[in-house]
Image (cartoon, rainbow, N blue to C red):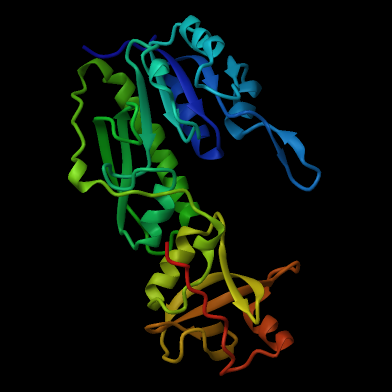
Length: 318
């Protein structure tokens, strides 16, 4: 038998990525509670701003909770129980769920994870799939357990990664896929057979840090471009010239050889810089505390010519 349209769903999500998933559930099922992270200070004025999921829930009049914590929060557990939710769905919520909470809905919690589990468990599967040069990723609907993305798989669908996509475009495509797949999973909920994950094939995608955006000029050119694609949303791509930070965008693989970090050409097509193998072309440069500008314009103003060496940054082991 199939889950009835009257299935009562609680939704846990926070960023804009999760809004299409919220809307898909709202269109097909009864949303009895939306849970998002608390409002946070945003911008130079540090104005207290709700996350996109909370803003959308308030806009359409859905019951909304924004607990500061979930662990040992009896009041929130009671609120979830009293909502009458048959099942809860998480999508980029941003907090770990304590085991006692997972048992509150009768069908437990389902999670929309943006990878083909058990690959890329963790906080940043979209970004690391690109950084590591994957050509296919996808969405997994899993039954949440107390581990880190370790629960059994209910549904899974692959998504080819277009060569030009950065983390921004890939996130948009995966958000649409997750929205469609969660509706299918909820519609078939009683009939889905959970499949345990193969622990031997598990890989991890830890939360990004600022240093993940630093260009590794010693890497081959395709790896430099893949990293640029993966960090496009945050922290973005950063290089250094004499210790001064530069934000780079519009990177692509091109021909050329030289010392890693060496400027090979400055022309109308941008800045060509040598990598450990091959070279990359850079279209736009944004010096620290200044606006972005065409790479050729920046180079002329900064006195950068063929033979100039950008700083070669290497991660500290450990």
